[in-house]
Amino acid sequence: MRFQPLFLSMMSIFALFYPLSSKSYGQADASGHGVYDLNGMEEDFRPAVLEAPIIRGLSPRVKWSTVEPAEGRYNWSYLDGVFQLAAKYNKKIILRVHPGVFTPEWVYQAGAQRLQQPGRSVSMPAPWDPVYLTKWTNFVKVLGSHYGSHPSLYIVAVAGPTMGSVEFHLLGPKPAWERAGYTPAKVLDAWKACIDAFAQAFPNKAVALNITFQILGNQELPRQIISYGLDTYGRRVFLQGNWLSVDTPAQRLSIMRDYSKKTTVGFQMLGTSERMKGLRKAIENALVGGASYLEIYQSDLIKAKFKADIQYAASQLQIPADQRKAGLSPETFRSQDLTWSGDLEEGMGGSPEGRTAARQLMEQLRQAKQSALNRDLQAAAGELQNARNTLDILREQYPQASGRLLEAQTKLDQTVDSINRRDFRQARQLYRETLQILKAAKREVLSP
Image 1 (cartoon, rainbow, N blue to C red):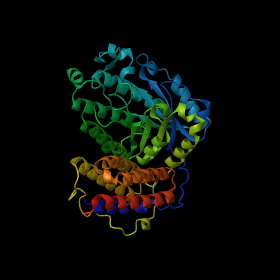
Image 2: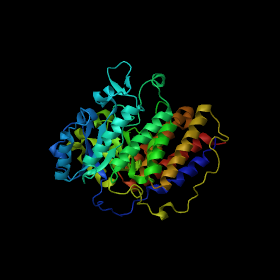
Image 3: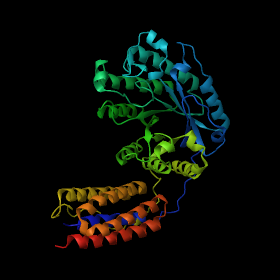
Image 4: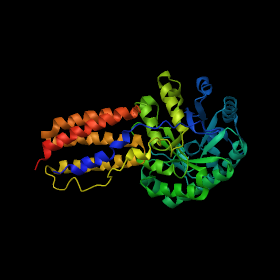
């Protein structure tokens, strides 16, 4: 069993824990970047949030059926009130009008195909239905004429081929959708029409796609929708993930960070802190994912215990995503060999599970190395946490080194905690100690 490549790779990311430079960033003048207050559908915003300068904006959500209860008859009272508050308290607005299950009855009376959700008393138009799309895009034009030039408006969310939210989701069994006429081409065309409608109705504002990674099991369709938006309208199309939590998969965050190089990226909490079992880790995930703005539920924004976390998010979101982790100087990485000199599995004894775990550990350390090279400390911390968990398997497979590997796990826990506290000097020392413990474990397991 050859551990040498593993330890070489771990040493290659060791320098990541050198302290950050003291470079600082000012507030972006008139920027919409920052923390937004997300409350329930058509709910009022609390004075405590409105009066807090650290909260950059408001995220009102309203039903189409509320705003246009009859064709051509509009009720702007809720949204006008929100825009008045935004102007008074110097807030920006992320605007969402929800069609889908909130489509007014007159649209069906005009001939739109109604789909009934299985087992529920909720219905919605077929997302590709031409009557529905015509009525909806007509409304979008009116919405744009009413709010498109308002200085408080920062983003308007693209909706249309949607259900209860404004995300790409089409929930339910695929066969039922196919019986209703679903094809990927129809959904793609519907999204293209809606993206065009919003971009044209709000020519001087950003429009956001609230993305998912599959639609009825089709992973290519979301990519096609995103590509159309970015290719056609460039950086005016923002991308947002409304599934942020403490457990958001690293792969999703990596995809969003890649998108942040092409356009502005934002996130919305999947739920309140009670549901998500925390807030700070979710904020860190948003930063790792390249966020420039973050929607947090109002119930969390008004809790005193989260004040420091909200302040942290607000300050970090003012830093451009490609600079946020830019405190490490090039010299920090020195001239260490960052290549891999073999495969950990080669010549390794033990069970297939042990060899698989070793390969997994090696890949996690590769990813940590890459995150270090990208100067992304939080992503590196995430991979080190994954490596810590993989050591559980290695302890089972190689009991002769279990004690040492347990020590290494403890040190990795402390290392990750130090990174999260931004105590990089301490993280560096703890990581050095981790390496020494793992070298001792290597001697206990490996000797030929």
